Length: 277
Image (tube, rainbow, N blue to C red):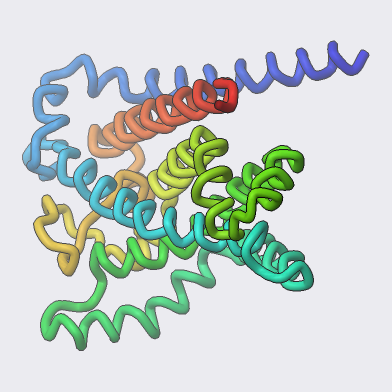
């Protein structure tokens, strides 16, 4: 009975996923079939002139999500190492609790706090601009995705066989040497999976980019410049119009995001199915 229920739940989830993808494709179809398709991946966003280029939003998404993940990953690895192997035994549970608590903090709290603290700081340091920039969005987004990555890494580090840990300890290895020469090689697929899941989380986040990135439809050339991500673009256009090709273009953005997340998920599934060395 349990197996049947699990199979049914998996089937429902798969069906809903396909239905959402089909719904987006159906709404985007007039745009994809028309002459506007040739302008979809250009750098010009001018709906009044019939140009619906989303290239600046694609670059904006990469400019925010990738640096955020690159900032968050080493911090998450270090925190997970301390919480599982390097900290005293009495401190490990509180550290894990802190990571778990941070996952429950609403995204708007991070964004709202950054508007009044980080943004003015960036504005003063840059000496120009509003402070709403790729840098600010990436830093706060790194803070947002770190707890999820930390919990994934903690779970991976704690699955290392205890007999291997005792053998390393018997050979006189320090905790740092154990982490470097045992934990990291054994959990490399899990670490890569945590990175990819963090990247997917950063790519799909809307509120931080909407509040902090500046939302300028420009191809970014500097971390201090504003940018608009695909998710923020969807939110802004949806709030502005409901019947025009401009509105239908956001479903093309949604399909692109769907494919990116799907690709990252497939990579994670492949890595997690590989046997440990």
